[in-house]
Length: 419
Ligand SMILES: NC(=O)c1ccc[n+]([C@@H]2O[C@H](COP(=O)([O-])OP(=O)(O)OC[C@H]3O[C@@H](n4cnc5c(N)ncnc54)[C@H](O)[C@@H]3O)[C@@H](O)[C@H]2O)c1
Image (cartoon, rainbow, N blue to C red; front, top):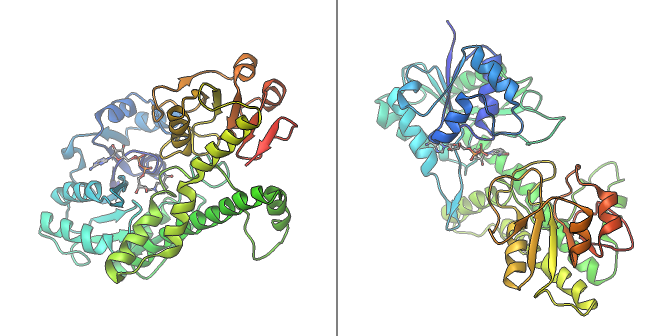
């Protein structure tokens, strides 16, 4: 008999998983509380870049994928995966979405079923929070009556080389039998699973990966600010350092970090360390401090550039190129463009912005959304390249702009300054 899978949360992580599972012959329910999203899925309209509309339509036509916001659609599941948001609220982990997803699944939990948490969270969540909610709601015992485990998601939206199936998947369970069930599930979906001995190790794995990136980006960002003052080309030094074939990994400066992971996940770790041990996680706090202040530095550099031309930010027309936190994607969550735009507006600038991918309104409504054109570039007192999407016409930008602050070192020209 075909196994039934429920994926709770149909976002960047949950929808690609659901699509993959359809191809692996599961009967899949994509459950989401957001009725607009569910309607779009039912109509074959994908809102996630990594899932093509054709793939979604094929899944619907196969009869193996049902998008629903009806709790009863979850009944009778063999496997359930939780892919709901884990944001911060007032700087602290907000696990309310995970709690409500677990409470929903508890209602339909049957002996022998397997529940897997994929949302990024602090070590201990699966066993200390999700397990008890499932037990209480179902009357069953984890590890004895049902399987429970954690498997961090490593999806990298827009990455053409590493997708869901070929990225190794770390798997864990609260008991050896749970691990076996979780590993067996993902062995059907990905090329390689990597078992670890407990759910806390798996939860920490994800936080190590993201904290590592966060700290290294902060390192090059701070270097970029000092090197700028010392008139040293930090980009050239980074490229040269990157030729070392061992013991070095290339990270580049930028206008700040964004997306759903880097600005948030390391704080889950530092929160857990502080709460359990009463100590600060100094690396995370320092990296937060540096990365959060990068938009201020961008605005300062722009102010200095205008000042050299005896111009004030107040009244200047500034054209921002790229609003997404990452190139070639439309994801503007927590993107530094928001802080840059906000500060410039508060200083009295007229801010206009180009981003062909970002449709959702994460940006101040006072920012005029425009198309990239020779006239827009020429009319701007300053152009700031925040996200170096490949679709931008860089020859046009070089040719028609008066001044460009390039925060990604994408272009070189006499009218271009780098971060
Ligand atoms: N986006 C990434 O690149 C990425 C990578 C790795 C891990 N993660 C982690 O995966 C988790 C999910 O992230 P995402 O980017 O997919 O989020 P998302 O916001 O794209 O999607 C989450 C979905 O869950 C739905 N939802 C919220 N509460 C629900 C509930 N109780 N029941 C059903 N649906 C509910 C929302 O409506 C939304 O559609 C987070 O913990 C995140 O940190 C994200």
